[in-house]
Image 1 (tube, rainbow, N blue to C red):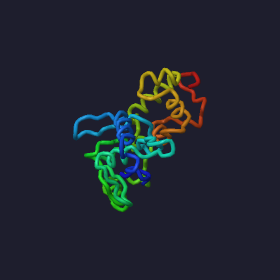
Image 2: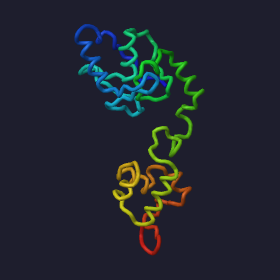
Image 3: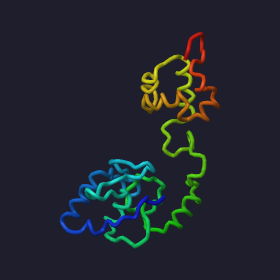
Image 4: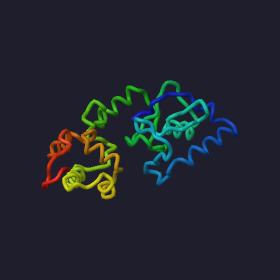
Amino acid sequence: MADAYCKKILPQLEGRAGELRMMRFWSKVDMRGPDECWEWQGSINRNGYGSFKLSSYNTVTASRMALIGSKMTEPEGLAVLHRCDNPPCCNPAHLYFGTQARNNQDKLERNRWRAGDHSGVNNPRAKLSEQQVAEMIGYFRLGMSNKEIAARLPVSHSTVSLIRLGKMWRPTTARLGWIPSAPHQLTEGRAA
């Protein structure tokens, strides 16, 4: 997977100001073992990549900042690609420069192309398993509140609400017998 933008970074990494930028950058990375992913701890963009404010007018992809900052080179026209398929990873050992064509080939080979089904458990960022969604539906039928359900599962009450209303996980919940278009489903003699 590649970074989203190809902005010039290297000129802003020179001198004392550049050193301070790199120190600020690495303070936002959870550095682990040399072979592990180093997760970005700052803001994440809508595509799942880390987002770093290099200066007041320049926000860059964290993985791009990590590779350029560690190699101190910025090849013209090349993107930063991930060997690990983990967008927030900033471990320079997992990153390399490559063309957009190479990135597209990697997506096809690794079955990461967005055109595929990314709903429910097929979404790489899903926090729930199908079994947990089935458990949630059972809680819906028992009349539990969204907050009560969220306390039992690894999601927020707003996510529970979106699932209850059919705005998330709809194909899975329908397959499991939950039809959100019927808001007053009767279960065990009372409204759910």
